[in-house]
View (spheres, rainbow, N blue to C red):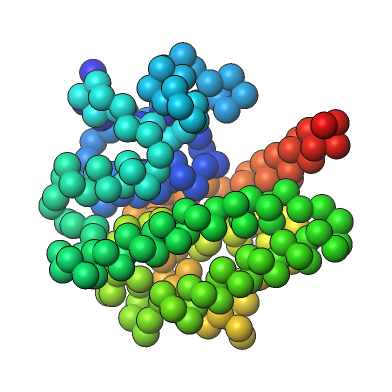
Length: 224
């Protein structure tokens, strides 16, 4: 029986955050694919508050919420640290991770947006978030974490891959090299890191899923 288990979903960027961290740390784990429309009793037991994935189970003890899981992984397996050792730099890393978590609602609105006016407004809000990252968070170094990726890079991995696929589905580009050169450079470098490149979903499968999911969510909205 595996000491470490991860309950996740193949297309979830939040599940992949955890996968990347475990891979970087060299932690052996058992992956358990969940059906989001029919979640297992274990997920409901392990995460009774939010009732969603990802859930990491270590030694029989469950940890929920991807950002919490990432910090748990970093503290439990301290080799190859993913947060800076300097207290101030570590605090700044946590600040930007929280900033991304707080702006999750903006990206969800972009994902579900329909109609030209609504999509343009949602794209504008996403662009404002990206502009803040471009001007305030990402510097001249290769990654948020310097020359190697850290938890900030991992937490923003959805921009490098999931957002680019969503742009293809919606037909609106927000991560543009002309206006966001450093962030675009970061996204390209991030996807070239071996552990990331080897652990991302197939783009065609992802885009097909996104189209279907958008239709499903929007049909629910129309019926409410």
